[in-house]
Length: 418
Image (cartoon, rainbow, N blue to C red; front, side, top):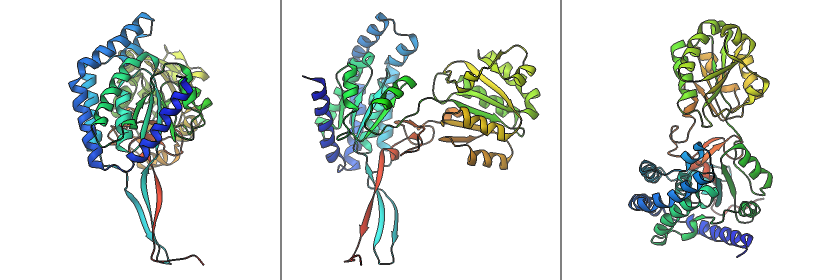
């Protein structure tokens, strides 16, 4: 069958499923999610066998080790996916929630109610667990989902989908609420991105190259973040021990993720004392430092930072360091080089902390905390579908509520407009 025709049919089926799913009760959705968790664990041997096919092909074709690690399912991974389903089931259902209500002078009662977005397309790379996470969040928020994973994970993704759909087939939920595109051709993605009549939102999850390609082709609104150039500003009023611990965690706890620290800004008043201390800890953890001229006058044996370094998302044990004269300079640096992802200030000065929170324009802004907390689960959303660095319609980590919108509801008793 022609790929374009097949993708269109998938989208049409999803749209019909979304209409039905929007009317399904929380109880029914939660029951399905819990059964899915049980089934994933019961069929773990099947999942591991299908995943082994993908891993073997990735190794044979010379995929890098980082991708193979993201691709590989283990017993612990499957248990984690099942636990994620149970956690989403336990979250409050946003669908039908009344967010506000007010009465007009003509006695009309006006309110806003949360409703699903409709059909959500997810385009992602290598991680089979995204198939479960995205399905769970979309199902709970009343949205049908179309999943297009990378070709390297096709067997794993289809296996997971077959388990989830098996539960749907035995429930009151529509079977086509969760669909995985079975084609590995890039034509499938291109066809999907043209179907704005059926698909309401696209969420790409992966590297900058993937996201830019999706944005360039899509007729459908795209939730995106191109990269995570995250900053920590160590203020003159910072506690040095706290700042060192936070910076070390933000850079080294998991350097290959979008909320890892990439640029450290240090106030000039504490630079001569603070930089040697933090540099020693960073070097012990294997971090390579690249600094501005002022930084290099204090730390003699580090690499010089180029203009490109301030824009860089290293996703590695490399850290750019700059000494700034004032908070104004720190904020200006973040505004110029940042990616609207996550920034943190380390300070004991309340006024400075509030100014940083108010003036820094990123989607997550922190005081005295590691940038690694910029994560849906860590922020209490239960899980996340992704992180948005664009302000329409969500900004920052996206959980269940961000997968809904609101409609107006109005109660009258015969009012007419004059």
